[in-house]
Image 1 (cartoon, rainbow, N blue to C red):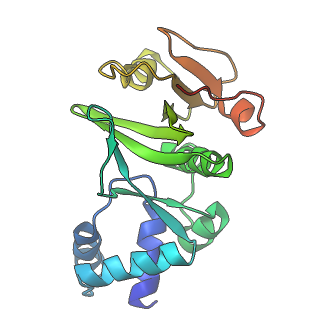
Image 2: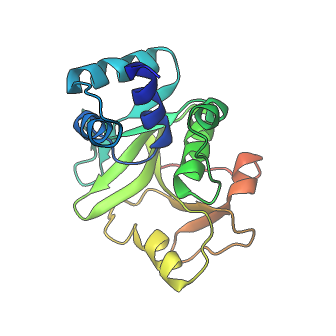
Image 3: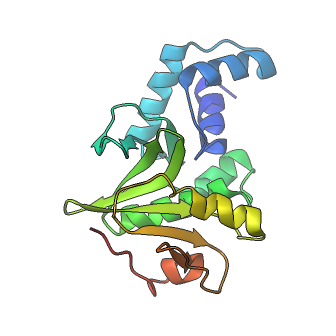
Length: 196
């Protein structure tokens, strides 16, 4: 496989993870024994974005209420191609579900950002017509620790915009003003997101 193919496979396998061209270059050098410059990684990512293979997502600074220029995460624009190129798609992996939600939000016409706050991250900030909401995505809220982690991600967010947790759980687990939506209901359009 050529350098572009290796970088493409790495980028698609790591959708939803924090991402830097330097980490890709270092990883490919250490694990696969070949050199690819940081600039080449950037060029390959540019090509992948131009070819609609992936989308690099900007950060939304929740405290400052502004979009930042850095793009720390990539999301695949075709999960089928992602699976073919990487053979690593696991529905129990939260990043796979994040990618599904990301694609659905794009399809519904939202601008989508990764939310950053001083003590962590919110999976998505969805914006349309100058209004927004915050979204956390999880596979299953299996225990109290998982519930606390996903709902607790909003604890330091002082913005009054609606907050959602989307998971595979079929029953409503909404609490503390945060709305829980099952992934199936969201993807089937049975539940809408409200923005403010």
